[in-house]
Image (cartoon, rainbow, N blue to C red; front, side, top):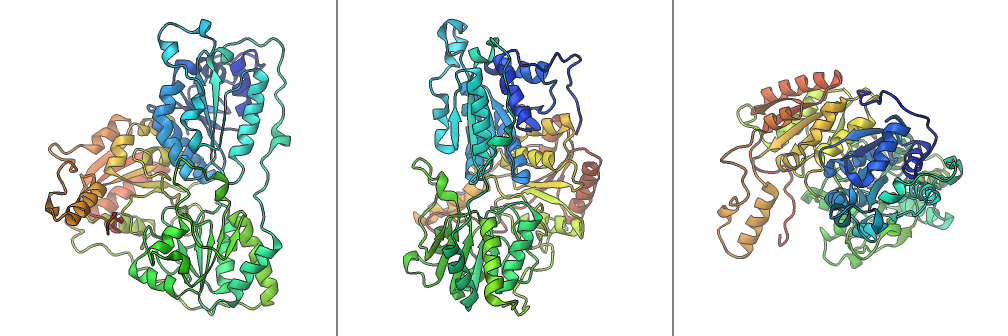
Length: 591
């Protein structure tokens, strides 16, 4: 990454102004980067980042849109599990960035969002502009999808707000926090030197562990089950947590399922990983679930939605069900991201990774060195093969096949995929192989998420690749400027079907329900006449680009060129034309 935009002269690091305290708190909290789109409401804070800290630790990342400010911090947290900072200008920036905040909330990632308002004191406001950019209780705009917010009224309040915010956002279950800085307080000169304390005594607590009763209950279920099924949902990025999940599956002989919405948590080539990571249960997957007499969920998102795909009467589902999660600590009334209520025989309030360790230890003691898995192979993933016409016209799944073939035994990080990703030929081999979906299913996040992932992995020696939808890319394209400007390497591939295709399927579903012509589904959906030159859009942001690529051979060659650029430290873009369709069609209401 380029170390650019350093000031020629940086004065003493002593805090002299209210905003200096806020900036120094980020340094004390070991925040390496802060993404921003400039705004006058935090001009004092901006000055402190530059002229008090020298734009280093944290370094500013200039973005062209508030959406990217948040999504870059989101992507960074996906990899590291730690909060990055971002800044949103006044009420208008907060309103614009709120979609990204909702994504991060639904994805349960830590993040310190710094906002600004005011000046709160009316005599300090400029006519007109400072009045429309001043809000009472600005945090109320996003309070239903943040973990905590504050609007400190003194320099000492700023210190406490950042210490508390960092502690809360990094405590499980993690979620963003918001700290709003009064413009007047930012520009207030300190009356006396400020003591900025060490954060050592303000660290987040370890995730809660389960009671011994719950550990023994789940261990007994797994030890005595005939056909146990483990659902691995949310989980940490450490290799130790990954290895513990594998040991638990192999010890119990349980079949394993994972979600394509979540980050990689289990090797999808493993013999016990019975179906590819999925959005919706396939007929084969439903048969496997019906055969299970015990289901243990490790923070599986929407567990009852999983069961509803088999029966509307989930309360009478015959399998014994245990669910390990801390997520209820974030549930509230405004958003339905808590999903429908699952029937549980053993509810466990604990961190999923810690519970894997605890139940594994209990099972090893209970089984006395015996392993219940006999070594049978239940994995049915096919060999990577292109669709029949891929040498003349690409299908959506062919991008996955091309990436799998080019990757071979190399190590990549797949930062993002489209909603129609098949997931059956591109395997996940370690905790950093895949970074999941955007959380809230809103468009424009994919490019910024990819840049955040690449920022976190810039020194890891593993290329970062993203497969984006054309709609997602077009709404988020200006994020690529930030990647080009700071030299953040990532390969962006757009699966371009020239349509808002998810909504085509919804229009088809409605037409069929109403007995109307489904062939009209494309009207108001297709992105054509003129066809948009996506490669030119990327090139306009300073990113090397090519396309449209239309065949498998062209795509593999383009991916190789893109990877060479990424390994050389540059972002690269490929526009891949695919036929309209999905490898795994989403469910539509009424189906």
